[in-house]
Image (cartoon, rainbow, N blue to C red; front, side, top):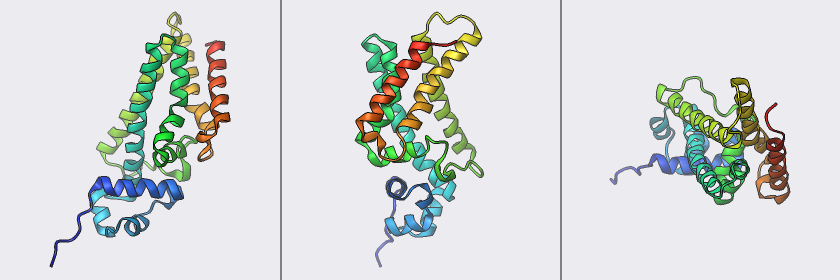
Length: 208
């Protein structure tokens, strides 16, 4: 008899990402992934341990690729000399990322409204998985801090700097989440234009 077919974790994650993109986070179940990939339920549990871990890994992989993309567009804009353009580029990065990877974009944008379908349930995650989430948060926070310091280098006092960071967070998290949702809205030029103008308005007003 031949050896049973091996299912690589990356291949399973590709199938899981596609299921999430098509059906939403709630449609990503172990049974659905088994039917889509041809792997057994047991093989999937062996690879990921739980559905929660599977969901986290699908999202984390998309988020890592997105954060790499976002940092590249920020560096390109900063090289041109205007940090405000860098904030706009960072805010539009979810849309430009989704242009190149629509399935990954749907996974990413599906959680920008605060956690669609309760997808990222952190209960039961391993220490390594929690650390992976912490690293994502740290990368986002570091980018926000850097851009706030670039846009308002003379911000005096801790409260003023805190307000500056909060405004940049609005630009990079809250506004894209509002204007690029629901699903597939990133392909429409109107919300992109509205987002760019909204970000520039926030930056023009500056910290209180």
